[in-house]
Amino acid sequence: MDIARIRNFSIIAHIDHGKSTLADRLLLRCGAVSQREMRDQFLDDMDLEREMGITIKANRATLSYLYPAPGASSVDEPPGSSRRSPPGPYMLNLIDTPGHVDFHYEVSRALAACEAVLLLVDASQGIEAQTLANAYKAIEANLTILPVINKIDLPAARPHDIAMELENVLALPAEDALLVSAKTGDGIDALLDAIVQRCPPPRGDPAAPLRALIYDAKVDPHRGVICHLRVFDGVVRRGDRIDLMGAGRSYHATDVGKFLPRVTSTDALQAGEVGYLFAGIKTIHDVNIGDTVTHSDRPCAAPLPGYQPPQQMVFCDFYPGPGTTSPQLRDALERLWLNDSSFTFQPTASVALGTGFRCGFLGLLHMKIIQERLERESEVDVVQTAPTVGYEVLFKDHRVARIDSPADMPPPDHFLEIREPMIDAEVVVPARFIGGIMQLCEERRGAYRKTEYLSPERVVLHYEFPMAEVIYDFYDRLKSITSGYGTLNYALSGFRPADLVKLDILVNARPVDALSVIVHRSKAEYRGRRLIARLRKEIARHQFEIPLQAAVGSKIIARETIKAVRKDVTAKCYGGDVTRKRKLLEKQKEGKKRMKQVGNVSIPQEAFMAVLDPGE
Image (spheres, rainbow, N blue to C red):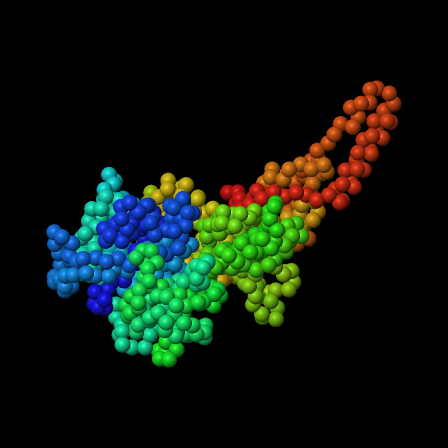
């Protein structure tokens, strides 16, 4: 197809603003799927995505649209513009992106393959934290932004107020906003016409040397790695000899094609098009996301810029649970990593739990999804430790090392300082909740930066936080204080020195490294007391007494005791000499003491997750 008739665009929005529903409606309207085949969240191919109602992986589809829609007019064009797009068929390459902050890297990948974005905003909720974050990414990438106000069919919809918010905050003219309902189909024809009219066609030269970007990759169990391509220059055909410039490897293109939305072979992909490539690549290790594909016999002059690799923010240990062995867990992790290379894992060991794996994730939701997929898809039982963040340690020889686990923290006399990760956070809340939110932020060692008003009723609070104070329950507390209306977006800003200590937990006088946490010194005693109080409830009583202790270094700062399960050994002594009862009690006491020395304490999964309770 002529490159002037191609439009590449992504749908970006805050979570639950209707991206997947809009994608479904566009698929139906353009005839990519029939009404009989249609299901909710059609492009989301994981059961977990449909169950949770969220998009985890960016998905794509190539649509064919006959422009203009029958009976449509050009009223949706910006004032003063003239219709430049000739009528006829157009190829629309759509990428549906996740909305959750944990998957922001998926949005970045999608934007690199597009010339325009549909910025979707809920007509009742208005601008949220991820709306702003994704809009700024599109602006930085110099993409055309089409503001789309969705859910206009809701009784609480206020589309014109939202259009003014977009104009005031993002300088997108209110009259340019398109009003649609992805649920009912209102405004969809006008939206498709606007995509053709306002989105620029891709730039590229089909006659130039091949230059294509790998913006995603998955593993097909039968055919190997499927590379998702955006072709910028040249043409790639089945049978071509190609090079992966970053990996330095050569392959034969065994198949090329498009997502219609199902995988469909074609003869070639040319400049401006989005599609897939099979080249006999066996493992995902051989492919770098962001790599450039070119011809072996006629390479391009320079590779495309590519991507920064995703940065893991949250770490925890996975250990095999009952009925699962360590090799089984390793195999399950490797299979999952083939289709989601954004998490990492490496072997580790614990005195209490045996051999396991230290895993890195993009955020708490990502961690939860990985654990759920392990248990569902590979049927393994996993014991998960409490999540932590990564720290930097400056040693006395001025060497800087990264530690991802409290167990790796060196003794205090070995280093000069320890640095914790900091984040820049944007908290969008109704103005009436500012007081409660600012109090919450101060409790979490947040540093206030500024306040911006989206409207008289909604504000954006800018704070800098230690990431460890935000990762687990901050979002829940935010939702609770704001009656569900607050939203949060954050980005890593760097590392900063802090007065941090390692809080050790001793169970039966033995340190359990999987329960250790790194905390600020001012909160160590409080966290220690709260933690062992929770552990006392979670760990079942044994045949012997179990002391629980919290320690910083060699100093015990808190203690609880789990009483032993005792038997009345004197029950059968009716009267008689009291020394006989004493003898039986002393014998029991000696047995309990011996059992305490050699007995193992069974620690349930809930005890490890008790570390998450901040206690405020």
